[in-house]
Length: 97
Image (cartoon, rainbow, N blue to C red; front, top):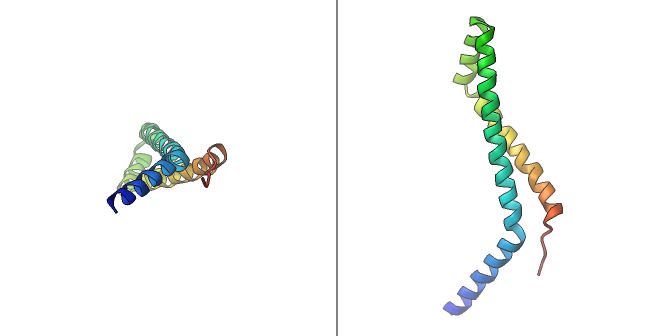
């Protein structure tokens, strides 16, 4: 009984790593790179707003306080992950056997 469970787990693990693993790794890599890229964009945007003046700086403070930048980063990262999964399905097709 234990050998059958072990064989099932090894077979399932092999199938996941062969078929779905590359798609997941590609999607996570693209999501991580896009999230860090949006973080760098946020830092540059904050520097530009601070250079404009005090009115824009207080608006930037409010936007950070409400977490709008974090929400945008997460939303845009999710979109990039969705796109990378769609592209990776064409590059790494899932085989049934």
